[in-house]
Amino acid sequence: MALEKHIEKVLFSDEVIAHRVNQLGIDITSDFSGDSEETPIFVGVATGACLFLADLVRRIDLPIAIDFIRAESYGSGTVSSGVPRVSFDLKLDITNKHVVLVEDIVDTGNTLSCLIEHMKAKKASSVSVCTLLDKPSRRKVHYKLVGKGKFYSGFELNHGKQKYLLCPDEFVVGYGMDFAEQYRNLSYIGVLKPEYYM
Ligand code: 5GP
Ligand code: MG
Ligand code: MG
Image 1 (tube, protein in one colour):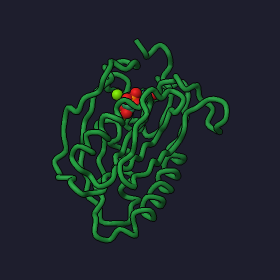
Image 2 (spheres, protein in one colour):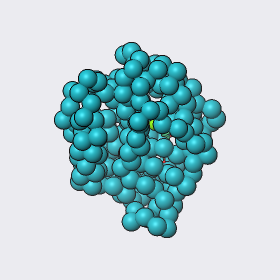
Image 3 (cartoon, helix red, strand yellow):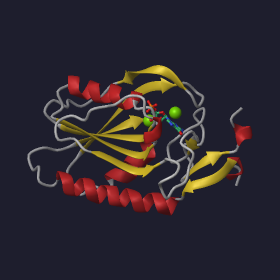
């Protein structure tokens, strides 16, 4: 396939992703099941979390609402271009609501901490985070969850101790994640061949 020719290696196949997303859905459903009065709001961080959000919410067995937010810190390349800002805001009122921020990947933590502060300012009663991928060894900013918020992560990308051996600086694409706005439509997560990094 034309697109496959660009990929050096597959890190997480469709099947592996589906299995993990299903488990995340079960965990989140169970954690939010006691709270009968409040409908949690799942906020997808555009554009990267689009496929993950779509799959995750179908595994949540609770009444929920869905919204989107956009924060930008990355340019078109693989290196962060500085302080992120909210460039497209929520439609829903999250005052006194439980928010689950759905992210593709947490890297330095800059974007996440900006978004959490944003939700806090809007008086969310709790802010949880569900990220598909996490690169904990690259963290520069320490974010603080709000209220009884929890941190859920699909896979950790960290060399050494994990079963998914990956250098933490490796840049991944697919399943919503881009390089220069491309490759989001891959159904799996992989690493690009160096010649496609321009
Ligand atoms: P942070 O603010 O935590 O440094 O970066 C967060 C955002 O940068 C992620 O939500 C994602 O959109 C982008 N990002 C970080 N690492 C990668 C990566 O390996 N691949 C892709 N495609 N995007 C990444
Ligand atoms: Mg993102
Ligand atoms: Mg991007």
